[in-house]
Image 1 (cartoon, rainbow, N blue to C red):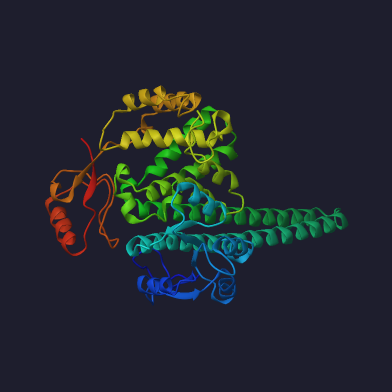
Image 2 (cartoon, helix red, strand yellow):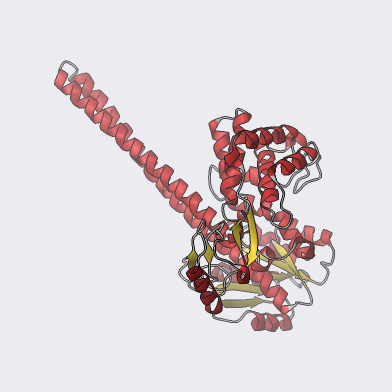
Length: 459
């Protein structure tokens, strides 16, 4: 998917989103033509599932909204037929029906291959918000697939280089056997072998650098959606590694845990902006379901990369509890991957120390985590967390305080970068505020609003 311009959903795209409406009610077609207007949205319609299957072949929609009850072919049959075609495996599909009024009906729709559902009668703003949220996920999926294709191409080039080097080595070995009596010729062969090994080492270094760059980009995408939580992934990764080392885990497992720490919130990238500023006790049922499923969404995104299956599995089970009452699979004890148990404790520690609504010192947080061992957290993980934090004060996070823009004062120190809504960085993190900076912030806040609150380092 070619991407060039930023639109108001936070995704980049050079053409309108292609949306197919499958419904036998013409009024529904007209309603969506009002809600989803061009050029941002390009809409096609079909009166039943069979007609919809014909349209998707050429139209290749980004998102499909299908009624459940229709003549010829209903929504469930249409969903099953669509998912049987690998070409449309990642196409977003929303089922729509007035019958889906209970949670078990929603689960049935999701198990059938649908990504979510819309209740009739359609509420315009709510429907558009949900559609935009899934379109964000679709664009991210397409970008991840493109990145994965480039990575596969690089791997192919590396394999080809290895093949060439292997052929050179074979040729050199044959030549060495012929001219083994000549010391000069032997030295020449050794030099060629050394050059081949250096070239292979350079290729491996380049591949590793490109992979690390890709992880850095994904981490930046997550922090772009949640700027108030900047640095959270890095702190969780550092603490998780300290815990994992106390388990004497192999290097490969520690690397998987570190990657999972950096990417554990990637499933939240497609969430509506309002969800990041709303208090959890004010979440709607749908918003609560989104929060419950973000680790499953994260697993799905990470699985797009070959070789990261273990990382994806760690992310999926972060919300499990050792007593078996967690999400999404209700695993208990050692059924939960060790990496997931480690990340769960590290995330909780950072969240509790960072919580500006109820500031707690590190000692109180550690006592609280110990009190939750063997119910929510693994007791050995908590024990090693306590040891890691107690022996390395750098694992403690800086205490921050959230203040309103109007309350900013000289002498305060910013805990993180201050950006305008359009992405202009006004003040870097760790900067001591002076009078000119306050004037700058206030001036930009009038023309390019800043977040209502910013984080400063608490003295």
